[in-house]
Length: 420
Ligand code: ADP
Ligand code: MG
Ligand code: ZN
Image (tube, rainbow, N blue to C red; front, side, top):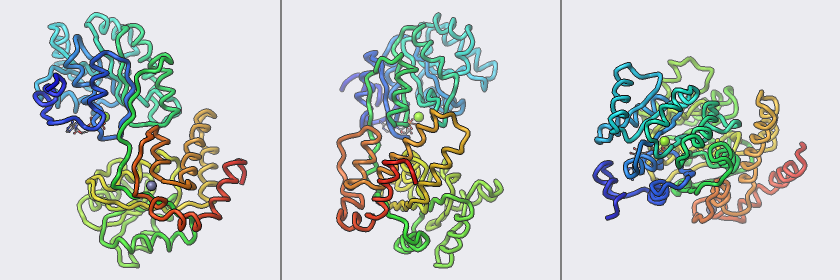
């Protein structure tokens, strides 16, 4: 058994690597600069935690959320690994303990909040303690046009230059723009060894349909799945309410959910969805972040999502248990108009708007794809070798093509000219 596999078993208690982990761990352990892109839940933490134990010196981990850092530190300590965090959430005792371990040369992983990098003292400290590796979790936080931008992440490049040690960056955000930004800002434009893995969710069936009578289309889709837990995403609050009522009228168990409801009502709905079988929640995008129900059997979009990333996130909430799940996304020219104007009327700077338009265009490209939906989706994320058999276009290419021809043509015209 190789050394990494032994550590995997003896320290982390796992029998085998998840897909992609081993190659990443080997590269990080060797001291290569690495950018690893894996979906949420893919097991990114292990890809820096395990190398930290195989390498000399301290691995500094930069992570955007104190809660995430504390969780990881706790789990590492339980596994017998010397790890500590320096964050504003520390008690004095905790901080003193971390310093003791650092000075005694025992600490293997030091988690620090990006804000800390703003002080010269932190840099001095990091120089003294013998850092062997910098690991950046949630590396997309360096992207100024992304939704999780953290200005202090911009200091990480400087830190890497000052310490002159390898850097390994991890994220689940895979679009090419974000990747480029990470390479520019964290690696000074020198492309690191890049790994991109595991975005396919083979149990999720993908389908798009042109809007014809959207309410009827959604009711029809739900009727075929009666008694199963599902989510319908809508573009407006009003629509969540009317569609939930329509579903109830058809005998479904259904509740609406949106950001205009009071917090208690929202929590209630979340809790019921989590607990009960066969409930349909009709929601705006406000629903989802905290939803971790493994057996959501279907997700439908009554309106086109705002971007290909949003689409992937939203359908990805179904079938977490690995059992088959179905999705349907409706789209029409009105959606495109709405989404475009939302981007244009937003307060984002022009560069960010251009990026948002590109992400919307990528979704339109998926909506009007002519062959395999899954291959089209995953190629956007940079994955090329894709086996499908579970999308509407692989099921019956001709049928679907005919059904959406008119809208497809309209979309093509819009995409070509940018006008409507
Ligand atoms: P990510 O950061 O990519 O979203 P995490 O690092 O939080 O994912 O890992 C998700 C879960 O998978 C964690 O509970 C972790 O312990 C588990 N995990 C990671 N690697 C393995 C493995 N090789 N075998 C079993 N479970 C693993
Ligand atoms: Mg993570
Ligand atoms: Zn396919």
